[in-house]
Each structure stands twice: as C-alpha cells, then as structure tokens.
Image 1: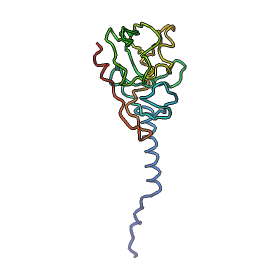
Image 2 (image 1 turned 90 degrees about the horizontal axis):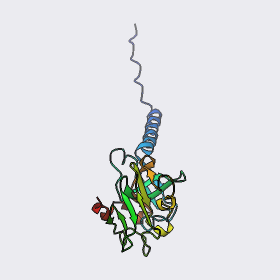
Image 3 (image 1 turned 120 degrees about the vertical axis):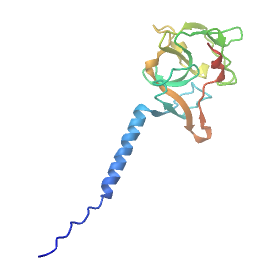
Image 4 (image 1 turned 30 degrees about the horizontal axis):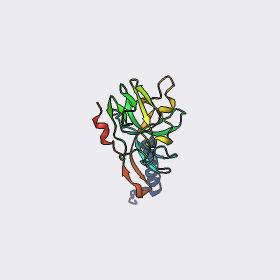
Length: 197
C-alpha cells in the first residue's frame, strides 16, 4: 500500500494579481474622475493673470455637494454655449451686483469690491459696461478676471436669466493651479468678498 501525498499547494498567480490590481486602479481613477476631482486646462485669456492660457487646474467636484457656492470662488461650469467654462463667482442668489460706484468699482449688495492689485488684470477697469442685476435664487453671476477679454455674465445680460448660470450647471470649484509647476499655487477666495453681506 502506497502512502498518498497531498497535492501541491497552488501558487498564487502573479498575472492574476497584477491584472486585478491594475483593474482596481483603473476603476478607482474613473470613479475619482467622475465624482470627486477633475483636471481642466485653460483655453483662453479671460482669467488672466490668475490663470494663463494652457495652465492646468484641479477642480473639486464635490465642493457644492457638501457646501455652498461662495463669492470669489473660481468655478468650472457648463457655459452659455454648453462648453466647459471657467470664471469667478461675483454674486450668488439674492445678491445685487452693480457697476459701478463713483470709484468705478463693482458693488455687491452695496459693498464695493477691491479687485485691483488682487486678481483683476492690470490696468483694466472692473467693467466698461454699466449694469445692475439682482441674481435669481439658485443662480450665480460670473465674470472673468481679465474684464476686457472675457465673455461672461455681462455678455448675456439680456437673456431670460440676466446672464446668470444655474448652480446645477457648476462642475466644481477650481482649488489648485498645478501646471506649469513654476506657477503652482492654491486658488483661494480673495479677502474682499468677506466684506459682502
């Protein structure tokens, strides 16, 4: 009678583990891209000098799922032509945005914004076009930082929503400029907006 031997233990397949690890990584990357964060490049000069052509920014897509849109945020949104667009939030629902006061500053709810030497493109007025808009609830008024080179809410002021964009059309908040590396920096809300009530 011969002694039975146990079958040799199966060695774990290195290929199978590698494939599962790779697939898991791809699925995780797709989920992050769809629901959490996305990268965008800047195609125009409308946000100069905060953002230059071909800069790249990371956008937090959950920013407005768990928080409110705030004045001063830089946001990516589905624009008036349906394309992804990036601008700065100047007014939120209920705000009155007006141009301009005696010093040619834009006001929000009567409070002037000190934009020059902060983020506004050098040597341009906050707006050459005069306007006064009451932002409807659930919508935002948006402007580029290079006011002479930006098609923004002012351009569409005669549409039914007075040039505003629905908060539902916001993709998310740009929070970091990561490329080129020499221009790496956080995109924070300017202090001037904290004075608005």
